[in-house]
Image 1: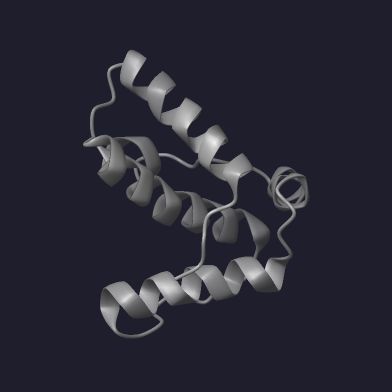
Image 2: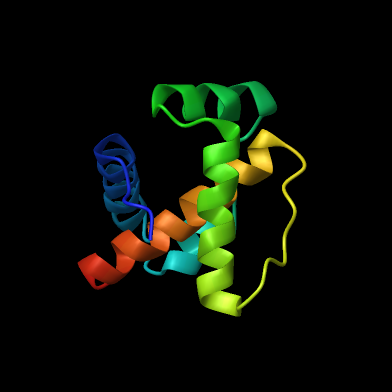
Length: 100
């Protein structure tokens, strides 16, 4: 399993905390009912800010899919989709740790 970068952990933990303050109480509400990042440029910048290449991020998401579903179900055709899936999987990990 890939180890989450501290910068991502800190950002998503703060996001989860803000979501809870806003009345969102489940991982699904926080990461599945709306996008974490909107825009191709913003998502490309997010990857750069966290020192992730697109291929590395795809590999991380594919590993999550294989572990969860036994196969790869989603092909990533843009950075926005990729970053939102990465945030979804990492968000699930953090929510589980926090008991959300």
